[in-house]
Image 1: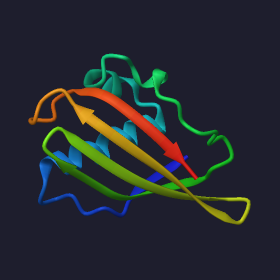
Image 2: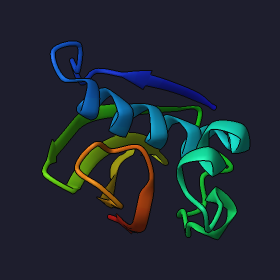
Image 3: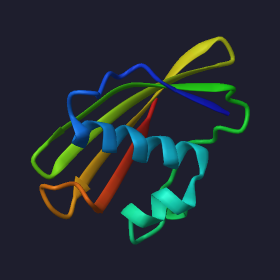
Image 4: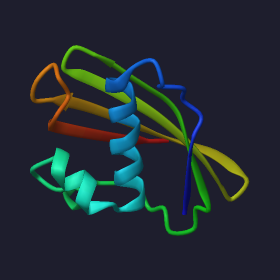
Length: 104
C-alpha cells in the first residue's frame, strides 16, 4: 500500500512527527513506530486495509501534548476516512502515551 503525504508539515517539526508516526502505523514500520509507542504499533486497531492501494495523509496537527491526523482512501468507489488522535508523553513529542483510531 502506498502512503502519500498531502499535509505540509515543513514548518512544524512536531506536526511532521505526527505524520511520520501515522505513516509508520499504516505501513507497519515497527522500528520507527515501536520506538515512539511503548505498547507497540501492533496494538493499534486499524480498520481492514488489505484491498487499499493508496492512503493520503491529508492533515497532521498538534497542540501541546495532543495531536490529530486525518487520512483518506478510496475503496469500492467510496471515499473513506481514518482519524488518529494521539497523546504524547511530553510537550516535546518524543513518545506517545495513547492512540485512538476512528474510521468512517
